[in-house]
Amino acid sequence: MRYNSTRSREKMIPAHQAVITGLSPDGGLYVPEQLDVFIPVSGFTNASYQEIAEAVISSFFTDYDRETIRNCVNSAYNSRFDDPSIVPVRPFHDGAIMELWHGPTSAFKDLALTILPHLLTAAYKKDQREDTVAILTATSGDTGKAALSGFADVEHTDITVFYPSEGVSAVQKQQMVTSSGDNVSVIAVKGNFDDCQRMVKEACSSPEVKRSCNNVTISSANSINIGRLVPQVVYYFSTYASLVKQGEIKEGEEITFVVPTGNFGDIFAGYLAKKAGLPVKRLVIASNDNNVLTDFIRTGTYNRNRPFHETISPSMDILISSNLERLLYFASNGDCELVTSLMKQLSENGQYTIPAEMAEVITSEFSAYWCDQDMCRQEIRELFEQEHILIDPHTAVAVSALHQYRAEGHKEYAVALSTASPYKFAQDVLSAITANASQDPFEAMKQLEELSGVPIPAGLADLESLPVRFNTTIDKEDGISWIAGKMEELSHD
Image (cartoon, rainbow, N blue to C red; front, side, top):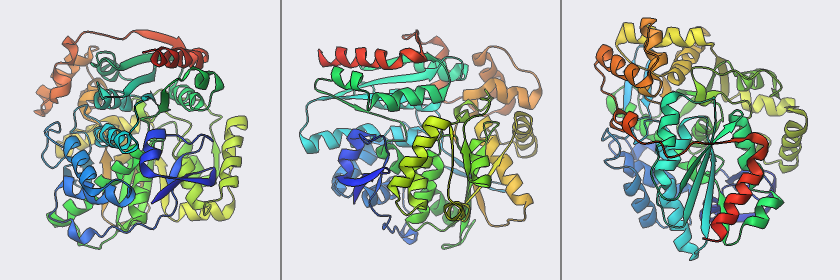
């Protein structure tokens, strides 16, 4: 399987080169040349997560040999996860909750960012390269720490994470600024996630940055990198297999996935799973107050010209959903000129409207809902009071969307994706349940543990005592020059 940019099919490259490069030189995102993969679910019912991951990733990354994929999988999905199933599935009154936060940083990003460094290292060996890969990563909270954890001290790599100075939770910030590793940097940006993301994407094509790169290749650990996205397809298949094994569904039965999303990567992985043969009825987008995706699905117009809201689900506080570009590509039957035009309109005018026939293709597979912060808090409180299930604010957005979807009469089995441990947002979770919480995030963790009986994840339990290593803050306007300086520094190492 070869990969091309969403903005041009002139150059096709193998998967391992797409993993190294991250973003296409024309600014587009890499996509499979054809979505002709079929992965039968029939053999997965009694398979381990590792076996399913090997089968799924091998189907998309065909230029990696099977043994290499197996080694990458086994190196990623091991005792660093606190549940042997890697992704446990918990039934609740309205279907099931897919718990994606049992990895080392207690967020769903671990499922991709524990394996991406191994895929990247294998790609380097394949091409016998010796240059440094400079990983530039924007984060709205969870990607940052997962990427820092995954790439710490990985040979031939250097990683810099940019996060909004006022847009992440206290625990998320503490996770990042205390990160270990000689090849990591963490930078706060005076702006929001979209500013951080724009900075990273611009750096990939900036002449100033390119001039500073000598024996340095820029890449990304964001879900714009296909090496980050494909591993996320795995947990859709593993969850389906778990539900069959649990007797919750019958093999071949279509089910719906409800995904809290801001950057569209997590739900696009579900789209790839469906195209690869997983019996998916619908994919439901769940948004918070930054409901640009909900409006897009309902109207066909994407408009980022709106107020930006800082919410208790900060990883979804996003107005520019990068991975949506991949869906536009497939929904337009690979019309690169149209995708390029739409992205230009978004950059210049902040909005675009897709053709009616394209909108019909998208709405035939996707639904979208949103909830405000009061609704989010209500879902946290009610689920804990009624079923003693503890969820974080992002998961609560998904549960709210599922309830709205049900209210329209949809009865098929549905799975809500739970993307982070509630302890990453202990103050907000505790406040939603008790209307009272400590102003200290670590004290709130202890209070929540005492209330719920659910243990604090090991990776968060000792976070308070770790020394702060990074305290640099830059203006968003200075991002490109800062990155150019960093590349020049790496070039002389």
